[in-house]
Image (cartoon, rainbow, N blue to C red; front, side, top):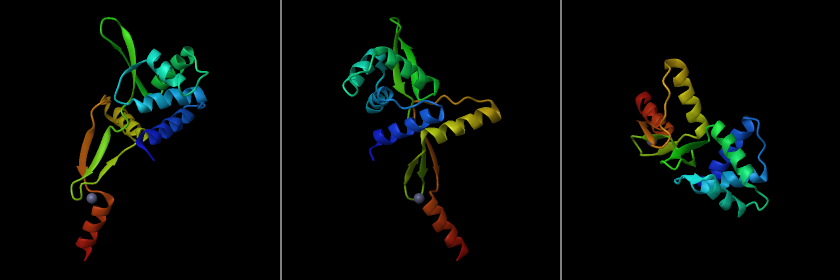
Length: 155
Ligand SMILES: [Zn+2]
């Protein structure tokens, strides 16, 4: 499964949990965002790209979908420069990477796990984590290496 498709699935799940149905128009908007993860897009640009996927999509639907996605923290919205053009981008999908010091294996946590971790931190120490762009790497031992190490200690 490609990363973009996995991400689409993840977003679909998040929307469902928030009580939103995945309509073809919403699906098209999400697909455009997933295909352009590294770029900030205007709603008009997203609309143009989404229209190629779902022909009966309207600009108003794209706006509504974007607002829902922003509300669910799936998409970040930013007003850039003096012209006040609003751009949208998918909140980074891989904020937290777990790197095994022993074998180099990299595990990335999904958005959902990351969100629940940041929410827990905020609840417990009142600190709101805002890393939405940069990858965070945490070193440690993966399950396999941990198991190997424990077996060694025991024998
Ligand atoms: Zn390992």
